[in-house]
Image 1: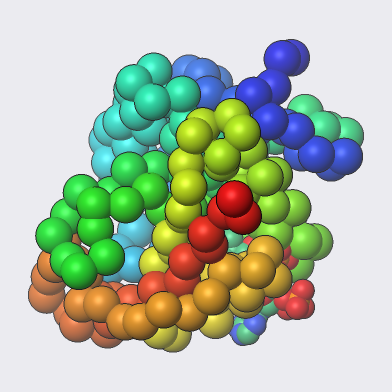
Image 2: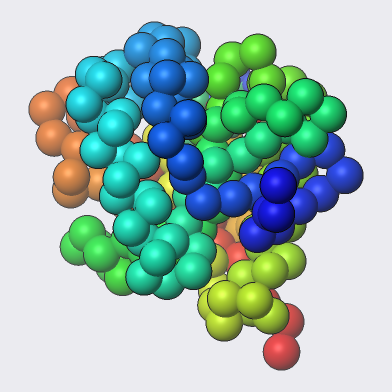
Length: 178
Ligand SMILES: CC(C)(COP(=O)(O)OP(=O)(O)OC[C@H]1O[C@@H](n2cnc3c(N)ncnc32)[C@H](O)[C@@H]1OP(=O)(O)O)[C@@H](O)C(=O)NCCC(=O)NCCS
């Protein structure tokens, strides 16, 4: 398998149709989706894969599908994506990550995020990258801190309506060295 980005343990690539079943399963896990308004239906997950794949074709980066190299198993996504919803911090490119539960706690998100950040300028021409997480999502914020992002503010996510627990977001930023 030829990966777009890789680390010792992980390969990051564009999405393929065989990712659908494990991604659908992950989207139904209430613990994985705890910081989002709800779990995902089969069609939500399939649509999301399509959008992320299309984003890759347009921009050459996306929230990449992540494989664990030792097993070749798909474990979730990590990557870079354009965000155009309206706020003082957007438009921007953000980093996002979501892994299946059995892959948590092994440093995988941090490892995948680091390689994306390292590639952001030389490979994708991005001078800065933001990241957003609900204020209750401490694991995600810890990943941001560990890869050297700085907390720059808070934002009310306009696309997440209804239950406001999910719209209070902390904002982190990484600016590339000149
Ligand atoms: C967020 C997520 C990707 C992290 O993946 P991971 O591979 O377990 O992350 P890492 O192991 O690289 O690092 C996680 C860090 O958070 C810490 N952490 C985990 N749970 C925590 C919690 N409840 N409170 C505080 N810190 C926590 C870990 O101890 C670790 O920090 P450390 O290395 O200093 O000990 C994973 O939990 C996930 O997929 N969550 C569901 C989806 C999601 O919320 N995505 C982010 C949306 S913004």
